[in-house]
Each structure stands twice: as structure tokens, then as C-alpha cells.
Length: 189
View (cartoon, rainbow, N blue to C red):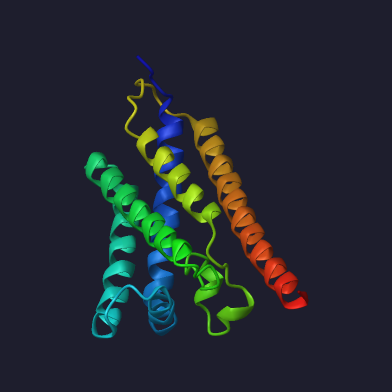
């Protein structure tokens, strides 16, 4: 039986908590921009887009805050994984429809007022990213062995979390850059 160090579970939980809380707050505080992103997917009726934007932002925020509490971890993991799976399916549907040019809405900067300059178009890389995130979420359900945390453990958790945030941000920026370069190339053709 596989058993993890509790630092792994703590770091993953804090990481998902940060990711979903920041994402949910971003969607709720930039609701008009997020509604525009939802319209771009062309899967919701116009009259449900405003409530859909609030529901999705609220769901992300709620799940993010639950990741910090560590209670009901199975519910949080399943809820977060279903949300990520839904995003992956919606992206896949639009890619199959040939709509790779729309803003994915997953980059925090893409919800700012001038989101066209920093938006990440749809690609299967986003689908793969969500699948990898789902796998990491399920890793938090692996049993951990009991031990006391010391000061070094908290430093390790902080630096592991900081590295994870930087890595996620770098990967997101690479996807934005890839999308921008592809649009330049299509403009030249």
C-alpha cells in the first residue's frame, strides 16, 4: 500500500486552494469579462450566461476555500475533479467544432479589461493540463503516515508551494505565448 508524507498532501491541498480561490475571485470580480468568455464558448443560452458566470465563479471560490479546511476531502476532490473534467469537455467540444480561437478564460490575466492581448486560445494542451490537475487532486486521497510537523516542514511546504505557483504561471504564460505566435503565423499566411 502506498503511503505519502503529509507534506505532499498539505502542499497539494494548499495549491488547489490557492488556484481555485484566486480563479473564483477573478471570475466574480470581473464578471462581465467572464460572461464574455462564456458567450465565446457558445454552449449556454444567452439568458443563463450571467447566472452561469456567478455560479461557476462561486463554485470555484467555494471549492478553493474547502481545500484549505481539509475536512470532507473526498467531496472536495470529487467536486474539483468534476469541475476540471467539465472544463476539459467544454474545451474539447469547441476544439472539435473548430473554435480554437476563443479565449479559454482560464488565465487570470485574460479576464482583465484588455483580455485580447493576453488570452490563451483553446488547445488540447489545456485539456491535458486539466487531466494532470485531476490526477494531482486524487493524489490527496492517498493515505499519509502520522508524524509531527516541525519548522523545516513549514519552510519546505512554503517553497514547494511557491515553486508550484511559479511553474503553473510559467506554463500558463507559455500557452498564451504559443497562442499568440500561432495567430501571428496565421496572419502571415
